[in-house]
Length: 297
Ligand SMILES: C[S@@+](CC[C@H](N)C(=O)[O-])C[C@H]1O[C@@H](n2cnc3c(N)ncnc32)[C@H](O)[C@@H]1O
Image 1 (cartoon, rainbow, N blue to C red):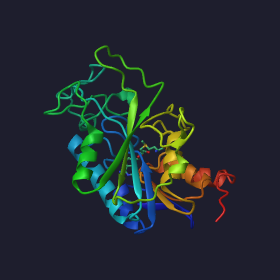
Image 2: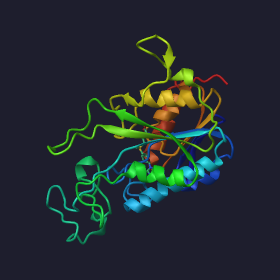
Image 3: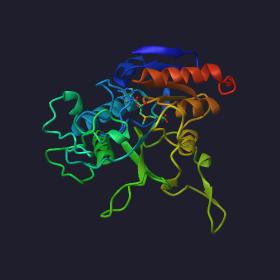
Image 4: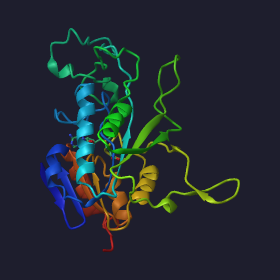
């Protein structure tokens, strides 16, 4: 793990998030708003420690280990939001049928639980499992959430991020996969929450009320990254669980959506990514855009 950028308000690390954990300050982080690489879908590096290419069971365990460790070192009034999507189990056969899982001798093409090449992977073999059948949802978000609940953390809500323009799918025997899940966890029943930051006016009486559970936003295509989360949604989450001056950690920095929102809203920020290019790109954004980095202390 290597610190690529550091000042008194922002720190950016390159490396596996588990190596980064030891460098995080205790009882300082107020919020973690993040999105891991999804299981069996995209893959951004050839690093074996990147989330998403291990077995389903390992993926769930690594996510649970990460969020539970973070909740344990965060402030008591802290919150974690995890943006995550489910995966359909495949047959282990390539979509292009050039590459059968069983027959492929080249280990680099046999990464467990990998989706098709079209989604950005080096492999073109679909996910396969000894128990979960082809065509079944794996239940990834629920597997993670239930383990965290059973460890004594509090699962406050599951926000549904509905995409009006989801990826086209060639299916006629189920509805389209048009949503991702945002899991909200806390370690205590009392935690920092600024309801006014997300309240909306009720249609019937004009009074402010909490919004419903389904939030709609189009995916954003930010330069250089194909799996960013929607700033419109995550900014609301940020404002609801932090105040100016609070510290936010993003274990899966990516294009730096959360970094930019923290700067805009005067939050301190720590980010980490296993892909050096993404961390360097975020560092460039900091030095290039002086306006972005105008931040009154
Ligand atoms: C879904 S993307 C995050 C995108 C980010 N939220 C944004 O809006 O740009 C997941 C990121 O996690 C990183 N990643 C995957 N495994 C990691 C690991 N073990 N440690 C640190 N980063 C990792 C990937 O390189 C990728 O950039």
